[in-house]
Image (cartoon, rainbow, N blue to C red; front, top):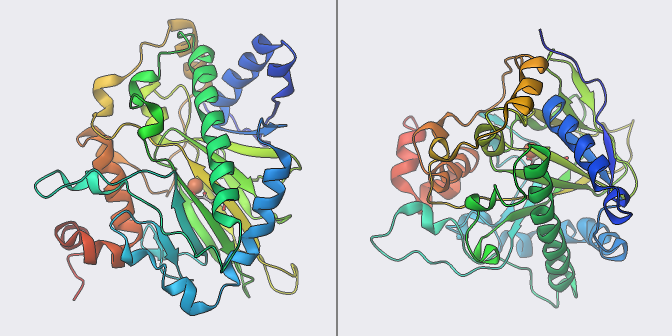
Length: 357
Ligand SMILES: O=C(O)CCC(=O)C(=O)O
Ligand SMILES: [Fe+2]
């Protein structure tokens, strides 16, 4: 028997800042087990920085088309850059969104002869400073604060699972800041019908920290009974959700939840929706089944009391069973962005799109 969650829980970071960590951890455990989604209210990210990042989002898409296309993702073996409307697939269906993929700043370590997935991390394509003054430094400062928050959250999650605060360190490189986390700025334009902004999917890594950058509904999470639950924007919050990687290493105690975005409807809404997810990545070189955590039995009992998770139509990440995490991430990118794959990973492109001309 599974339980519906109906509403996404709201956790207040002020509990951490005012010495109520135990309460926060207990609410966190509950959210991880039952929902896999939560709002984090009053996150430790400078509100002024968040405000400026939100303000930049529409401006980025107002750049002239030729400037956007000069940053097209197919320039980049790292799958970083601009994707025009309709160029991305979720489970074979076109998503109605336009986006810029960025990441924390790293150099590409790949050299000829290395494994192909090592090419996945590398420098983002930034717009020219003159075209959008202050954007790069503002967004980089935001990413750095969200990255720090993601690190704090992984420690709290570890404690919520009854493990020491450092039990999840094994999933990150040392130093952590040598890793590339990804983030993107997404625009969902107005559509005429009930269009797929982004189709039902799970996130692949550990945690996603999402800033809803405009006042639109549209994001929905699927509860275990298959119902789509609204996750509307709430002021001064980030939406945090569990990815398939975290679910797997916690023996499915923390649950990855399928989610989607319905496009804003012309006539009902008057402007596009914007959002800014930050995807926390994990070390590229390990196979997750080799690193499953020894979660204590009282916490496993919470999972068992929750019951099984309903099957859904979402994209899944069965490759985790046999491939290192870096390869799983690369395969995910190949499936979503075939044009980039065709240019930079022709063998994988042929494997996943055998019918392409
Ligand atoms: O735009 C959103 O609110 C969610 C986007 C999302 O789920 C994703 O890009 O993985
Ligand atoms: Fe997602």
